[in-house]
Length: 478
Ligand code: HEM
Image (cartoon, rainbow, N blue to C red; front, top):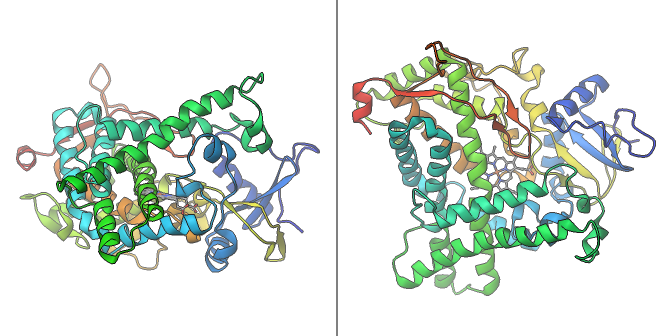
């Protein structure tokens, strides 16, 4: 029998019970009510499994990874909108493996460490921008993440305004956000709609899809063409693309397929990396506004570890455990993608006596895992970096927060870039600035809301804060 699930409508099943707002919290509540680590939902007659515990995730996505590493087909996103270059939506197979291998060779330790100087540079760019115009912080966060990622992937120096590569990446992200609006496009539920002719009444999605397809395919191509052009001109900076193409040439393994794979993989680094890393930095700032006492503790930890005479750099890794704890808590408290991207089974399976069918959607609920009160205690919903500390050190008995990066073979391919960037940006901002609540017209502090906008990627509802140099000396370090 299938894992337990809530009783649904005779025709639609549970499809209309799943809330559009924060469905991950509802999945968690249902699991607790039914006392089961995994639940099943009936979506218009088709089962969908949700995995709510780390133990079940480790077993299914981890130990039985080959059966849980596929993705469903996304006809709207891949076929109509032209995102088939994006490994996040690719079926498990040779094309995916070739692209994922590039991530492994370039964006994982030790190769990823080559990009630490770019991360430091991005963090310092952010400090300068925050000093000059603190109220525009959301824009500066995006810009500095763009500096880090595009310099690392394609050797591009991102321009301050109207950068063509950042603009192209943003347009393709916008296109996708339309496609994943729940219920907006029936075509993903009814793949045959793909073949409806453009003139057919109600076929508006096909016309929109054509516009978005241009945006979707343009971004990875123009960034790659730039990087390749720089190599041909001999003016390239070291980057994922330049290093990888050079290796292909030196090993005599260059081929058109390989070149396409590098274009796609580096394109996904920009596409998947910018929005998600920016979200984690926004959450960090919001948490600092809402929890001044944790902020103070973090600043003291930095002062003790490195003093106030210089800015943090990667030589400080491992020396400021409280910043590591704080970064972990940011990723746990508001996971960037609480239900990630759906996985898909290829063959039937069983878990704890329950049946998991073949060709079935399987959602890893990172939110439930990271907000499990059995692991994190009754205050699991609160922001509290101290939960990862013991006697001034990282508490080795606490689990890491890897669930925030998804599961098994499909787990986030940019995890190391994301973690290194968050650590460096958090440490740099706290070394220099106080993050304070905004003031009302009478000069009284107001507490911003801790609400989030719902969607594939979590973002705090736009909030205000005051970002002020901690002291005169701090400002001279910039
Ligand atoms: C705080 C930042 C980030 C978080 C929390 C995050 C989280 C995630 C999650 C939950 C998934 C889905 C995993 C699954 O299906 O089980 C994912 C996939 C992915 N992420 Fe990230 N991500 C972050 C940053 C990045 C960055 C910086 C990059 C690249 C530079 C990146 C590249 C990818 C790619 C390529 C995939 C698709 C993997 C595949 O399907 O094989 N991510 N990420």
